[in-house]
Amino acid sequence: MTTAVFFDLDLTLLQYTEDFETIFETAVPNPPEGAYDRYLSVLFESFDQLSTNPYREGFDAVVSEFEVDTDPETLVERHHEAELAATTVADSARRGLSTVASRYPTGILTNGAPAMQRAKLERHDLESIVDAVVVSNDPEVASRKPAAGIFEAAEAALPADEYVYVGDTYDEDIVGARRAGWDALHVGDDGPETDPARVESVEDAVAQLLD
Image (cartoon, rainbow, N blue to C red):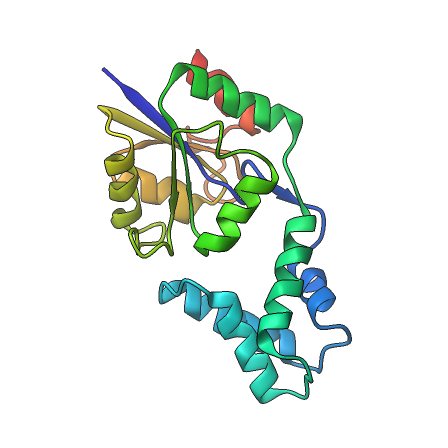
């Protein structure tokens, strides 16, 4: 039987050296009071509505509702540059991904905007390691974890008999994968502490996959 393995991207394979508010303030220095909260509100709503450019919609709201004298597209570009600069992939995570990819059909399955997620993959040369990339807000996918549709898109991209998902968020990643009929390994610290899917790290998840 063939087993395919998919990894989450943000906060699983990839970590951040800055928090999201700091990244926002790089794009909008000295932001007006309430601008960041409004940006987040519109951003997350746009993600949920499967927009392909939720960042633009978030900054459209900031410019139209607050005294920010910069065009939204410039803010998007600044934000993307700052977010990419704040990403890092540990050598151990890269080695683990490569090791799994040498044994199993392997992919990355991630919620996010297509351009941003693929820019992260390109920056850290991750796409070349895997066989498939599935991004929620890609129009060909149009489904966000924990919904079944994104897992179905992954199955179409990498046909196999069984699937395993490695992710950091219990409700989105682990519950979503299980509802889709997948096994799961949980590298986060949310959810039940006694859940058998919980492991300490991506490295531990890889060790379990190869056991």
